Image (cartoon, rainbow over all chains, first blue to last red; front, side):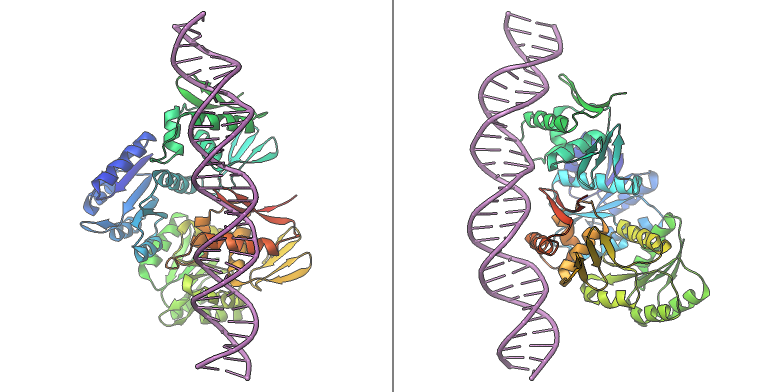
Length: 222
Length: 222
DNA sequence: GTCAGCTTGTCATGGTTGTGTCACGATACG
DNA sequence: CGTATCGTGACACAACCATGACAAGCTGAC
């Protein structure tokens, strides 16, 4: 995925960039509206993250211009909590979601995924794989017709694995995905959750394979 | 599909138009009641999106007139959150649904689809689910034949849950849905309302399930 | 005005459970 | 056989949730 980040606070921008890069996304960064316009005109983006307080103008003008150009790229607005009225007009102008600063990176990532999923797969939210059906919106899993309610972390882990089946995730990467930055969590936690998920998937034709020293991968037996 | 949008805020109107156009719909835009009447008389629309605060009068008058003319075109009302108390009168006058500003465009699209679908298969305003019948227009609930009057907030909460059964709503999202932005309301309020709703639903085969750390979901026991 | 009655959000408390760690056993691999 | 890596049952704690009580608001009647 290719993101455009419009944010004048350099440190924050750098943090977001590195986080997103870790997820395998490509991020272009603009610190000014004028830059942002140039970037947007030059390339196709899957998602735009837009701060509204910028040195050379209001993010609104960018958003307005963006939508006026019949551009359908989803936009997530980054806003301070105090700028309430701005937030309102942003949504009215066609933003797809908003995140209030300061935000948790895990939350931003979740919002991004949600917006992208909503935008791409339209109504199709549940993921099918063999005799397993996973519904992240409903928060449950169906294995051979039996409904299993997943807990928060299990859900998030499965979501990550399901969205990139066949891809290997290192434990380090999974920790990054599941926990926020300041949560200091051992990698053993991931092992525990993998174990719990495996229990839920027992009897299905989907399994989480261990690749010693590398990580985990979701496989579907043929 | 052909939509008529009645909205005096030009920026918002433009944003909605471009969004809808991207979905392949044709949208006519009226900024005044008088214009709207002309449009409505001139053409057949599949759906009307109606703002109620308009410079030359109240959208209600348009709605009344529209229905008086035996016109069956579904209408979705766009209203500010503070005007939610008007909702009953809007629905009484024949609106099919309402969306509070500011709204998420994805939500507006979903509401449009829902209304059109509902309209295709003959109109029914009340929602049935197991031995529970919910009438959002009348504001009451029938559980096993017993009529229960709901209070305003309980009503809105149940409406949100009923319109997307099986979907998990985080408390954050529910706060967003039920309260306006400048109401600074704790998430505990949602817990309280869930509790109150559960009391009303006692003895029915519909229940609000708690998904710890995730939110709430309306379930129907089989 | 004011008083009663109803709605609504907050608070404090207590119960429940999801979560991450630990310790130890199992397994892969050189 | 030794070591690094992974699996897992048990556990303690913190986070989360339910709920009764309460106070502030609102409404309408008089």
